[in-house]
Image 1 (cartoon, rainbow, N blue to C red):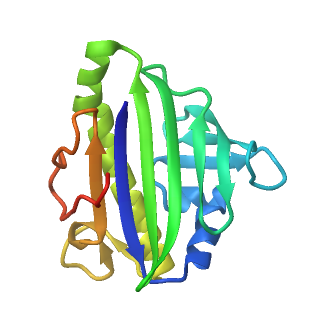
Image 2: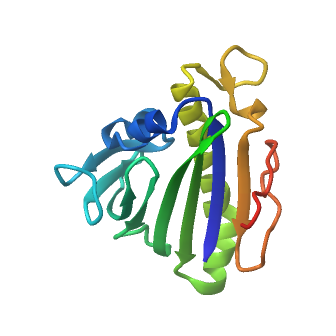
Length: 191
């Protein structure tokens, strides 16, 4: 099982963060690679399902496994991509001195033993690491009402300069270094 963990500090109240995180239809505005997210129930809750459509056209059905208003939720992908056996994510929001801390964890299990682990290290993990890192930075910038900038040194919010996005990785080998090591990061305690 591969685990990708990121966290970000956002200078806004946790209640505001919760509103944006649970406005699933607006998810494409801040989560990289998402074309559309549609809830299949009147309200989000445990057991509710949603359809995630990616920018390349693939769609996946997800079920909300846990739902704790203003604290977090978890999802399980019911029909993951062919190269993955299982895929899930957990999102938690905590109050912090500066506003809110968002913790996002993704777990997935490769379908094809050794070849799957190699593919995971070479492709899946680096891509998902970039997507999650960039998406959390876009979320932070959106909530702090700052434009997202693609390059360091330009006006607005830049992921290249964001030292408040943390990382922890587990592949059954304990803690390992950030494979991209382009951005400042830290390993949160206990992960």
